[in-house]
Length: 86
Image 1 (cartoon, rainbow, N blue to C red):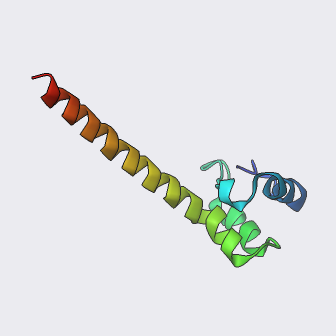
Image 2: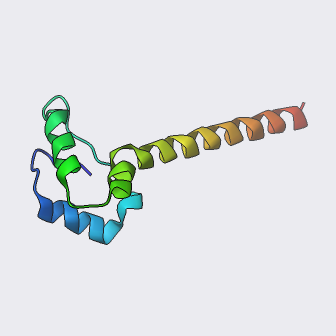
């Protein structure tokens, strides 16, 4: 989710309530919006430290790990298929 420069709690808390902290990756429209504002907003949001960590970077790191695993599996499948047909 990106706040598009609108750092207000109601839309953020609604998104959190509907989607859950495990499904939110916080972002800004850099270079149009400074990252400092987003960081300050998230640091002061009335949510648990664990949810802040997930939203700030934890969920993005998990997605990166899933993507890496997916790419490795695809490469192994492709390698296996190439050797089967030679």
